Length: 437
Image (cartoon, rainbow, N blue to C red; front, side, top):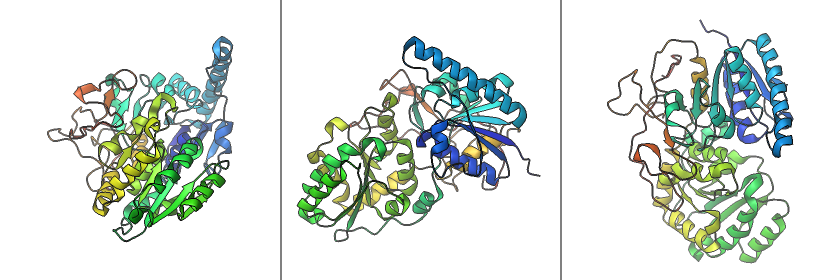
């Protein structure tokens, strides 16, 4: 008989934290569990998320701005921690899972105070600040990438590769065929920089497309997201070049546009990478250099190393370099189709289900050793690893930035080759035995 349990999800007020938490909340609710969200005012205001899920807004406390700011931050954390304790005594959660951001810290501290099961989910390829602070104390760490910077080797036994949850419409793209592409068909190009990084794309991309050989340039069908302050200048440039471009400040139906695209030019945020890889769309990635801990460069690692993307540091992102990369990817139809296959090989379409399985495993007896199986598109145990063996699957990075990774694996650097021949190994875990496993 299915046991109904209570789960608390804690996420900061940005889409990168809130969207995967929302996907997990929907899946847990679909399975009959009761779910509550802890967030801040920003998270509560994001439209379309957690509309049918119990939501609690709590003070989080930002530790910044010198001694006065640190003290105010500590007071906020203490207040949020006490409020979360009161909630847990009434709600009785089985597990509290944090998705990063400031609200996750007091929520997880309160769970640790009361002996409630704890987990964190890291969306990026660099362990975030809150997750680093609590990695030693939580019961489980779920990651989106097989290589995670700032994840210490001693935490590998409780680390589980699940991926980043994506919306169902994106999963449907991955189940469909790649759009027909040949030497005489249109080349559908999607350009999206998100809210933080579109300006450089607006200045470089039109100029780069103008440098393409005529036989490729004449086939372009462009959809580009621009900042409001950039859109008219971009429109004028495309008109001057005689290129067919649809411009918008917001992509209301991103999955439909992504489904029609052959190639994407984008930043390397966690959600972007997750959607590209699940959909199976090759990309030219320009990591945002100001991202915390340079995590977008790390996010681009796996997709670029496996041939699903070409990554260009922003300092080298010029019209000439962009044109060269587009010709390399799209000039040969077979090369582009192969890149799409490589991109898809990095995806985790069952991330939401696997993360829910991990939470349901708390308090149960060990019945399996790895998340997923071959039929569901998940990695298998590496050869020679028996069921129940204590193997590692996440490769940690030593030190900060681009130090040498554990196990002699050379860390990824933009513009450098990366060896991906080593098999991914999965950690032993406790989980429920559900259909398909």
